[in-house]
Length: 69
Image (tube, rainbow, N blue to C red):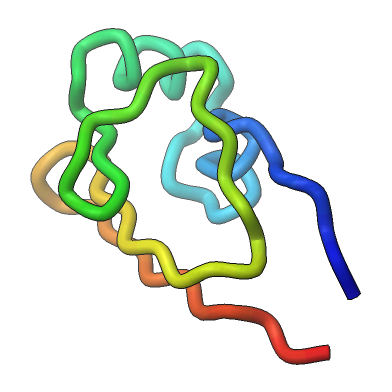
């Protein structure tokens, strides 16, 4: 099952790491969202078939593990 990449903002909303799209855009613009220890931008795409560590601000974290078919 090969899923297409999703926008970083949609990923944050789906994982409930941000309360709204506006909050997500603001945090990304401020550089508060990191994926695998690198800051992300609004045009960043996330592949659902990889392992990701996501940090939002200082306290919200998520580990996404590769989905099995």
